[in-house]
Image (cartoon, rainbow, N blue to C red; front, side):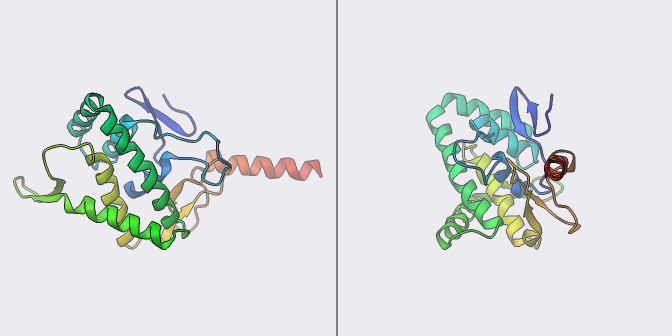
Length: 204
């Protein structure tokens, strides 16, 4: 099941993936960044969403997602703390990607990414060497995987191509690789803007 903005996965509503990079998916768990306080645009309503978003971007595998969700149900207070940590750093990341971050916000992002990276180990057991988070599994894994991806984007040469959709109730981030993309989804925000412009012209 899906809507213009969201898809339903394992009984949980998640925002559509439109960003073009997993490092932006945490920021896009909120819509309406420029709207007044109280507007409902929140997708990160619990730990399930956090784990599933990390999983669908292939930052952690399906077994890890399922294991983290089970652990979150056994330790709801710890899981709630992780969601709170995600919401707090999400605001700093959004400010950083949109060029509005304070020095304190930049420092908080740098510290969070460094802590997440410090938990990585190089796995040489398979045919290909891969970085993975240290074991045993921790509830921090979902957010730390997303933070590592954000750090990769910030240092990988594409950060200057990140733009925010100007659509009403939106503000989602995406990598504008072509330099010509304006909207997160032309069929949604783009068409709404066209309709609003058309109506405004015919009301004058």
